[in-house]
Image (cartoon, rainbow, N blue to C red; front, side, top):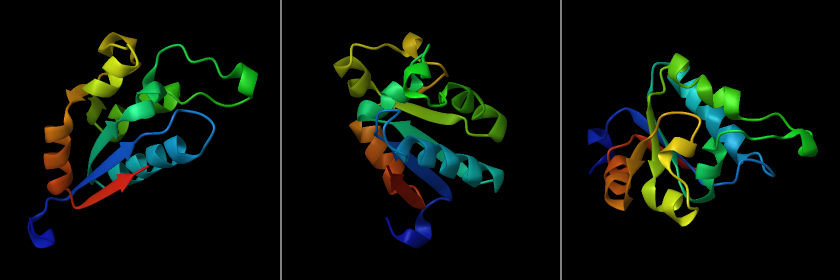
Length: 124
């Protein structure tokens, strides 16, 4: 699809485990900034990125702030298109009930179509 025909949606794909690097925080900040400026955002958790959404994270031992409360604010900012790769959950023996926020399951085909129809894709 030609760039001129693409929608105005930004797709953010986060694949990193929640702690140990700044990519999860950066992806979260980009999604919130885009939403503040009334951009449509698809927020996709893929691979180890699904671990960012696990309930009951305790970060005391690593002296780091948990991402849990920040993710709970996504809906307040208008980020309602949150997706979790179904295979990534299954590979980690997780279910949707293990997640701190509501997310739609996605597969490779839907992700490819989403990326094709996005104005920009950020892969972190």
